[in-house]
Image 1 (cartoon, rainbow, N blue to C red):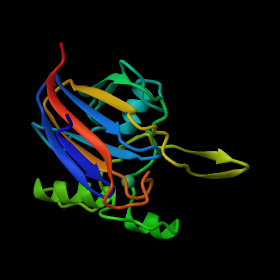
Image 2: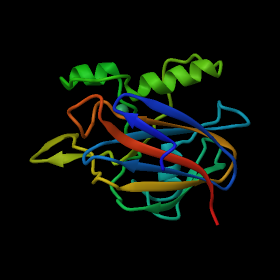
Image 3: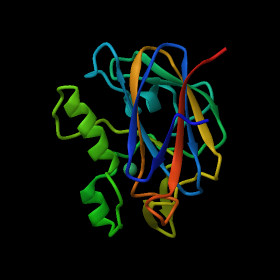
Length: 196
Ligand SMILES: [Zn+2]
């Protein structure tokens, strides 16, 4: 059973202890989830998708890889995935990006949700770290670069384990969403199962 079910444009904050598991599962095809993580000891220390991509020599998630903080401390590990199309390069979706793309957004943008959490932690900064774009993809087709529908199929998941104490925020993206109905559940999040 999921601990939280998200509609597009909603988010959850989850505190993890070392060894805890966190699963992000798509309920519908085409849905993207964005994820950021912060050290529990110091929320100013965040997951760096840039450092992770370079240190792991990867531009997507793959089984066994570590997600590193800006100070090269391990925050999360990828334990299992059923889909290997994810993004480590793009920023969180914002109202301005939605406007530029002519998208009809529902709920809060991932940036809005992440920023609200940071503000609650006493970090009222405008820009937030780039997220892991779970099921997110952008590529060039017929000479035109752009966001594509999320790579998720119903039931696709990524399961992480916490490598250190951290807070993870998961947002069900309102920009790349898999359901026309804004009230439809699109992402399930489950956590706090200890990995064996
Ligand atoms: Zn988003």
